Amino acid sequence: MTTIVQGAALGIEPTGNLSARGVAITQPCATATVTVGAEVANVRAITIQLQTAALADIAYAETVHVILFADAAKAGYVVTGGSTGIAIGTDGALLALVAKKVFLVTSEADGDIDLTWTDTGSEAAYIGVRLPSGRIVMGDAALTNAT
Image 1 (tube, helix red, strand yellow):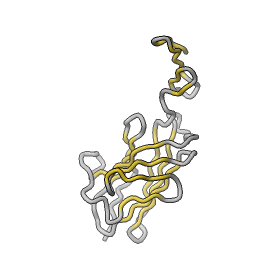
Image 2 (cartoon, helix red, strand yellow):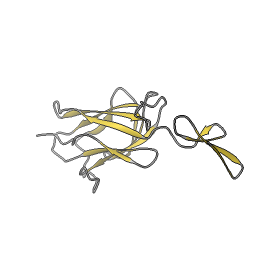
Image 3 (cartoon, helix red, strand yellow):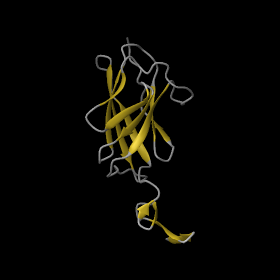
């Protein structure tokens, strides 16, 4: 399907993304899976896989925000962000925007991001991934560690 808007031909690609003049206007990254591993010596592994609306792994590097919330309902933010907080693992790149609370994270070319959470305390924390659309996908478990 093609529609003309102010002289530009807009089309829907087979992937479902909107494009104009061959340039994607909407990104294929529509959702994510966020898996929080079990605590091992105050550390939890976090795996994020960015996906298309069809639940296929994206095939390009994408930048998202990772935000630590105080509850699963996203009603508040963490107070401290853990003793060490979030660090990048083997896949992706991470930049702290607000120390131990808000991060800019870029995936690998296959949409994969590996993080670690370290906390020697027991602060309640829940990880959310803010996608390019603004939608926030929450992790499947709390990051809270036993002390």
